[in-house]
Every structure is written in structure tokens, then in C-alpha cells.
Length: 285
Image 1 (cartoon, rainbow, N blue to C red):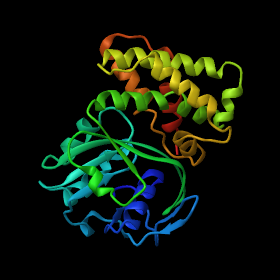
Image 2: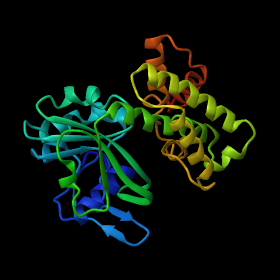
Image 3: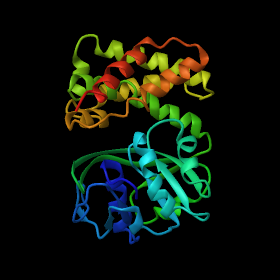
């Protein structure tokens, strides 16, 4: 497991509980991985590695670092990935294979989307909130890897559409909560729902231009989800902002903007989100 943040830590703990030998490839060392669930707390036996030189070739690599940190995983992948390795890219965005294939050219790249709400409490300490679903591209039988865990695996042969559908879920709530510093209760503010609707409408047009089979029904489902979430629910981008970490704005709204530019589609709202949060990410130390 490369990256032991909210998603990586949660998945690694469940794989460890199921009996797999799990190694955690991290930058910040910690003594053990602790994952809190509603019904139990897992104290994983996973070994913690902090240098690529400590790693050896394996059959499965799960890349769960932030998407903007992919290049920093190159050293790990050089040691871990070989011709028989499957690299599960468990990241946000719509270009998983394109970003990671050059870093592990001999391996099988399996794009995946995590529908898991979790929070990183501290180094090696995560708290699961809800959902345990991974949507993966057709390819290797990743379901065997997760046998014995509560993680649901959904193989989607149209992964492009699945990735854009996930992106749509994120491109409004994430930047709005991050910019305001408030969880989903901010959607009770006048004009916030209208802003979210505008961001979704722009992204839907771009997704269709990119060949994704998403529709107004998908947008309406997302709007209902936003309305039904508890007021204190946060987003990954909000937690990053509150912890003064870099956000994934470039992989979310930035992906919409880049695709829009390829097709000559105006996306002023998504471009504004990218500009504002991008400026925050680049603020002087």
C-alpha cells in the first residue's frame, strides 16, 4: 500500500484483518496502523516502510497516495512493481492509467475509484465514516484480493463513465467546502446550491464531450445526495484545507477545465474554483 491516508489506511487495515501480509509505504513513520470502525478498532500488523530500498517485488500494489503525489511514488514502484504485478490505482481523477503506466511500464495498471468516507486523524490513525465500495476497471480479478473483507467490488466495463460520474460527485461539494472552511451545512447558505448546480452543469457538458455516458439523471442524483447528507459531513478537500495540506483541485475541477479547453467549452465556474484553490495551494510557506 503506497500511502496510508484516509482511504489507504482504511483499505490496508481491512486487508490486514483478512489475513494478507500488508506493507505500508509512507513518508512519515509511525508505530502501527490503527483504523476505527463503528463496530471495532483494527490494530493492523502491517509493516511500515519509509524508504524504497526496504521494499521488494510483490504481486499487488495499491497506490492510494494523493493523485498529485503520483510522481513521488516512482521510487516505490520501481522496487515493488514487476511484470507479474497488478498496480491498483486508487485515486481521484479521470486519467489513472495515463498517469501511472509510465511509472510501472511492465505491470498491469488497474484504475479504481473509492466510494469510502474516511478521515485521517493522524499519522497511522484513520477513522471510517461510511461506505466501503471500490469501482474498478475490467481486467484482473481484484475481487479475490478483497475476499474476506467487507469491501464491495464493482467491476465497471465503462470505466471512463464511472470516473466522470465520480468526478461529478466531487467537483461541487469539495471546492465549496474547502473554500468556505465549512462542512455540508454550508449548502444551507443562499446561492450555494445554485453555485453547485452551475459547476455540475458545466462538468456534465464536458463529460459528454469526452465520451462519458453521464446524464442529467446523474446530476439530479448528486444533488439529492448533497441535500440528504448530514450537516456535519465534510469532504476530503475540506479536511486537507483545515490541515493546511495541498488539495486535489487540479485533479478535480482542473480535469474539467483541461478537458473543456480541448473541446472549446466555456467553464467559468470550474475555472474560478481551480484558480482560487490553486492560489491557496501555492501560497508561500
